[in-house]
Amino acid sequence: MLNKGMLAALVVASGLGVLGAVDPVSAAGTQPAAPATQSAAPAKTPARAGASVHYVPSLPLHARMYYQGVWGVDSLHVKTAESGELIRFSWQVLDPAKAAVLNDKQVEPALIDPMAGVSLVVPQMEKVGKFRQTSTPRAGMSYWMAFSNKGRMVKRGDRVSVVIGPFRAEGLVVE
Image (cartoon, rainbow, N blue to C red; front, top):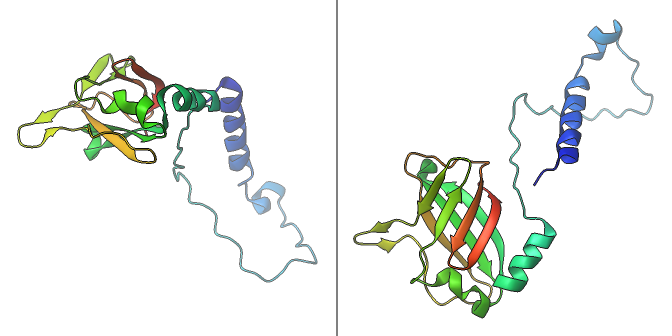
């Protein structure tokens, strides 16, 4: 989660990268002298302009500690799948007893995106069943469930909440 100070630092840093790319010949009118200790190694090729940087958001430490201690889970991730038609929520179990509610097939999970004004559900296919794992959780194992995102209302970068019975994970960023 970016606060205003971190966002300002990113803007300044990205601006410095653009300003640092000015050609010294056209900026000063002459080419700067090469240092005497420069090696004959080939110069690195600069990153191509417009290249996107993949940002992987993570939960703040206090949030991770809360989910670990209260719910026995870690590594909460929300990602788009199948060209955005599904949203996949995954987690790793640390304490199976505490994490049992996430795999309880009697509880209907929901993924809520307040900005888009939608609440997504786990779809059920006739021959496959629900798109979620409901086996007894085991420590160290990762589990997942998929939410139907028909119309692609939830997009990358959106902040969502996942509600499964009493479990509620808020402010997760869709990757």
